[in-house]
Length: 228
Length: 275
Image (tube, rainbow over all chains, first blue to last red):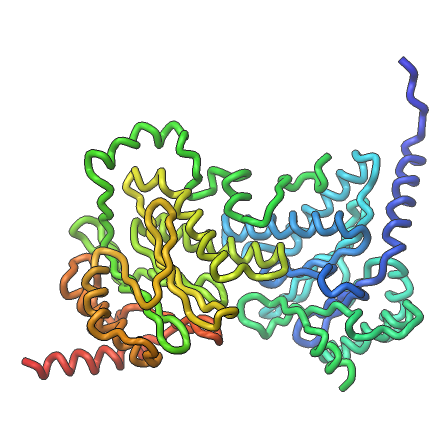
């Protein structure tokens, strides 16, 4: 039996990370930004039907960047996880923290054990209520998880968008219109071109809504908000 | 290779299938008729006949803008009253509701599972199921419950929805095998169902207003409670009234207790004067 070539673990992990990063860098950016009534999710997405942002549960949303087929699978698995928890226990027992942990474990396992790591980056967002703060978790391709405040960015050139937002983030939290304008400007600046409202995928987790807090903004609504 | 490690690997957009496939112990019923504990009881209905011993009256009736669905609030255990304010009419999603007759536990379980099912589909697929699709899905769930029917645990739903494509309210009734039948005007099920239908038949016409439909529904429930021990009437002393919901273009709306009380007050006053 021929011995397999020896590759040091460091080298292997580095190669995998590089591969995953390259895949993610090809994609466009997605921003999550807290605003006065909840959390805004905005993605540079020319497709009107292939979504990057999705509802997960009553007050939880998901955003995925990178390879569509992979984050779509993760999105579906997340919804199953959330619906199962809600069905077995109660609706209020479904939390972004538990879902993010599950994602983190899953991505970490894939990164360690599979030859090809998943080329995805995820955001799991929960809108807070009754003085409970919003929660934003960013999960990377290797399963590392970060707890973000005020805003978070994933996808290609996310550092640039982050830097742009960091300079302009404000307290108290902006109104929806201002927040959307800020996201729009940040995405345009990084894309280095005009971004028509049809190319923006926008959704909110609005804590003033009853029941399910997630709402997708139509192109018309987005256009109106940006124009006014 | 599993696409998503550590999460159960599953294809398809049905929560019901997901649950029965991966967590059968959590599913209230699953279509596996070969299950050991079910088989020995299969000959029971041949002796007893598939009688449907549930005390309840729930009904649905169309009006000009949609459908009204209503039900009484009584649960019985033999000759005892088990609960005076049980809820038999459930909002399932923004545009549909169901009422149930049968064994209370599995009934409520099915309503909850069906709620999750529709929301699950909507989230995974990004669109809602059509009204017809929802009705068919419910039929499959009733069919999956068939083995439990042989153990006496009947779940019999009455489903209504507002069909946005057709711009009208729709009513679906079922049989224990999951057969699905659409009703064009009204229907009532449960032990007092026949009495309720008799009342509705005398008053129903096409193009009722919302108020008229509600009045006839409550009258039908009142008459059913009058004839059937399994059906509870309005309880003026405790302030318990039947529950009703309206399914129309604007979505599902609860009929408030206050509105129920006014209708019943008028009805009772009218009946008292007749003496």
